[in-house]
Length: 214
Image 1 (cartoon, one colour):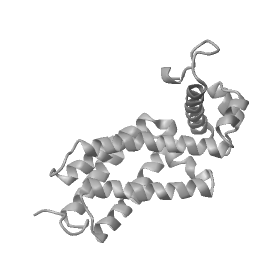
Image 2 (image 1 turned 90 degrees about the vertical axis):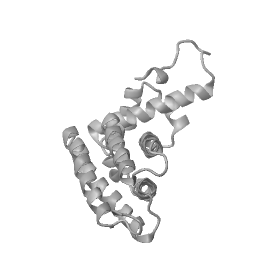
Image 3 (image 1 turned 90 degrees about the horizontal axis):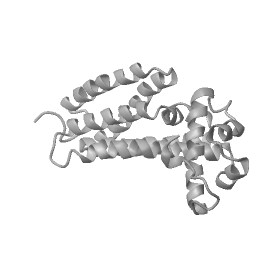
């Protein structure tokens, strides 16, 4: 457990809102860790409470249900990934090579997936077992990721945006399989394949007007 999620000793060491924030973080992390081992269906609230060392009363002060806690963990996973990816895109500045921006972003994305493995399984695998609300959130996420790719590649026309949406779907399919199989080496191998294919699409103008070699 990270130092930031530990509660200090002493009855009044922290204000209630800070205790709630730390407990929420512990429960989200515990949800991710237990679910990575057992899957969404087999994971119980009791499993999460034991891993987080948080009382049932505290859990229900923060969450309405297992699904509510799962969605909070999913949102946290998205936040971790997007913070890294957007930071990678931001370091490229303006006027640079769009493909270099994309390569930096996808490399950081794959590194983040491996670094946050329990959250990655929630984000890529268990989301489909959590029901319609979770799947709808995943669709929203795909739309957002397409806009991120479009920003990285500097495309704005309809053809380019469609290609970005297709790229998001393909990336999701390619990374989900090794994550579902707990194959970290397989996940790392996706990067060079994606980069080579996207560069090929870029060079032949598949992202629309203004792309490809001059």
